[in-house]
Length: 396
Ligand SMILES: Cc1cc2nc3c(=O)[nH]c(=O)nc-3n(C[C@H](O)[C@H](O)[C@H](O)COP(=O)(O)OP(=O)(O)OC[C@H]3O[C@@H](n4cnc5c(N)ncnc54)[C@H](O)[C@@H]3O)c2cc1C
Image (cartoon, rainbow, N blue to C red):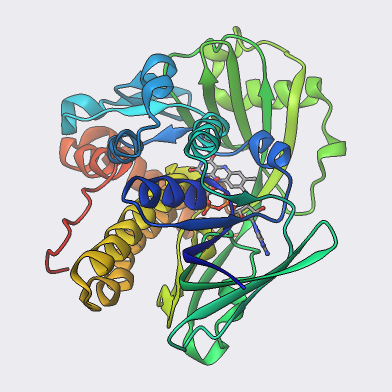
């Protein structure tokens, strides 16, 4: 049987980043990924990085292209009743966010992993976790028709919402908190220079729209859609027509009808599984929690979990005590719930909910208050740029 110190399940941003941080600390890892490397590298997802995320990527030694190509944004805009209101993140908090696609973060991490020589197995089938409560855990999987077994000290479950890790924990040992929203986001990616300088979140009577970008030549735009909707129902022309109706008159005139290079529908959900540890298994990223993308927190939260897990594991190997491992879940959960609250709040204020006249009044009142009150804008801004990480060894 092969052996490694930490078996990492999943080569999304969480698994790859954890592998890179642990490798730099001299800790052995094996990454097991169900899909092919090409599939992982091509997945279109998040694109807004908090400063704390950029700092962790720097620490992992994978931020040089991010610094060269990432777009620094000092503000975001909210469109409501035909007017756009700018939230000046930089003036209110001293911080900015960086627009840099998750595909690029993943590519940088995959390149670093390959350069390090640390092992990754793509297209690993039937990954299964064993003996999580024992003195040593095991992972089994199939690769190219051959069965494999690996003994390890710990397993990092970085395999996303649909992965095997969380499902390997007895249901009696987990508390699940969930809210499913009655709509999804239809997203389009197109190779065209964005006619807007910063992200615009629009609350329109026809539903939510988001004008966003991934680079100076690539836009990413979203429309609130019904959960029953299908990508096939939307031609590119229909998408951009509806987008123009929602984004506001001023911008509508300059929105291009660009051919999409990717189009997808994602349901919106809030989800937390507590705790993030079961014996030798530690959950991180989407394996433990989901936020609706409105607050741009999913990827950033995966990165803060990974930083905390890296500090817990390296602290354990350095100090030979259990205290850093015991602190992992409560430390993560404090930040997770704050990001859940903010993502829920953003979603609540910006989308159209049917049959909720009282809720609609509350939403309008909340947005008007936001546009008039610097205190309310500061609160939104400090959450949007990312709340601070708690320090290693701090009481949380
Ligand atoms: C369609 C979509 C759009 C999104 N858009 C945004 C956005 O605009 N903004 C934002 O902030 N966030 C967004 N998110 C969320 C963000 O992308 C995630 O929070 C982030 O990818 C979490 O990283 P992760 O590594 O924890 O999980 P993932 O990226 O999901 O990676 C998990 C990995 O584990 C692998 N895996 C799964 N099961 C197994 C198994 N049994 N064995 C081995 N490997 C396995 C998967 O193939 C995957 O590579 C989006 C998510 C989705 C799904």
